[in-house]
Image 1 (cartoon, rainbow, N blue to C red):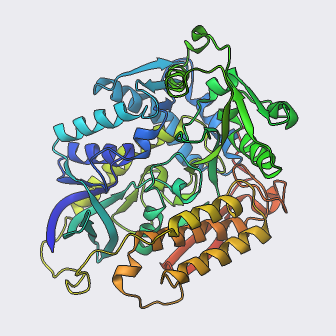
Image 2 (cartoon, one colour):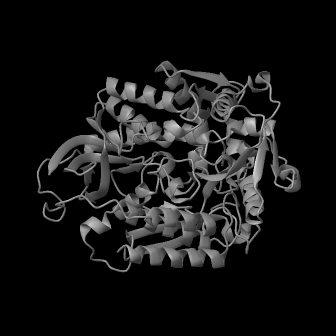
Image 3 (tube, rainbow, N blue to C red):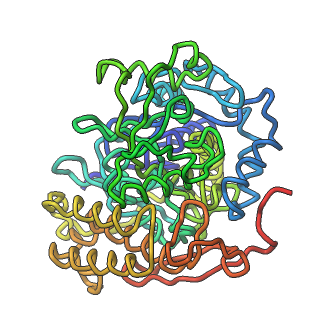
Length: 531
């Protein structure tokens, strides 16, 4: 088994992971950044709209804070929100200073890119900066397990496609593996975003919170033969959103916020899903939009140009449908990205708490940059005081991991995604969630993923699909326990917000994926709405 040593190990090469690596390297640490693909590629950052909220100008930190709390429906961690809005302007200015091609418009910083990989300019900028400060990249490596013993941090991975195995010993670990959007049939995430980071964190002994809150972006391209392209909010607002009967969706469902796909993602997604369950298709008519109508929104202009190339113009309506977009829940952190496990830090979409019950558009990338930098600083300080040990035998015996886990469970993920979409997605009910749980348990048993067996072969226990199924189970269980509707979480059998009972966070922790403990932590004040 190959063994590598570093001061700080960053797991994940999206914006949060690379920004953490840059910060730690700038403090004099030896840093490795490990990723399943090429550095900076195949991430949510690349496939994002490339839009950051919170650039300095007419948009004050107070306004940013207010909008973030309104979207989060009273469940945002106020300390995290305050960090975000205060540090965002400086962190975003840094990206421009480092050479990211971008432009400012209102409260937003737009990375200049082409649809659908608008965020490529972000990744390219960060990778170049990281290399310039000495960050080492370990690509094409899947991290199978993380461990902390006596403040000694280790990661076990294998080089794709068939090994060899590699063990990385570090003084501190930053987890920045993204979310779990690809657990759903329709999503706009990379295919590998199946929640592996959440499983790794639970196994490390960290806590997760708010896992019931999964955001669905309402207006995604659903044309047969075309990818599920995100239609930017302002472009969608320029058109008319109708069902098969010709009814105007926004009027029918009394959605007044504009742009609706930015400020009312939860309500619009739920309305569209209801229409689809009743046999209706949803169509977006963008005919007649002039180029000058798009001048103030680079994202809309780029998307419109792509649609014209791909479908030969915008004269005919486009079939659209919601898609899983972002996971608000995640690992429980403090404002310096510390978890309850010493030396283990988390940033970006892998972390929970900042967004509450729903994320405000543009805050995802800003979160990655702001808290990526904080996680890198925290990890560097920890590593300098608790450096990696270079003695000791491997934690995983060679004969136990003699071959990588087999990744080709035919049809398993497809069936899981269908179940999560239909029963654990946009509109939920107690009956449907329990049925989804039963179906997933049956599917896991079919392929040998028995959740009841504590002593499994290591190859099965570390299988990414096993982790995905367990994270799906966590989302279902959290959704079943929260008996109200709030933000992105909608229960047909509990259709109203119930703040007297549910102003707080559902917390889950180990000691293992097969033996989880749940608790509810009420807020210490009457909600976190702006005053």
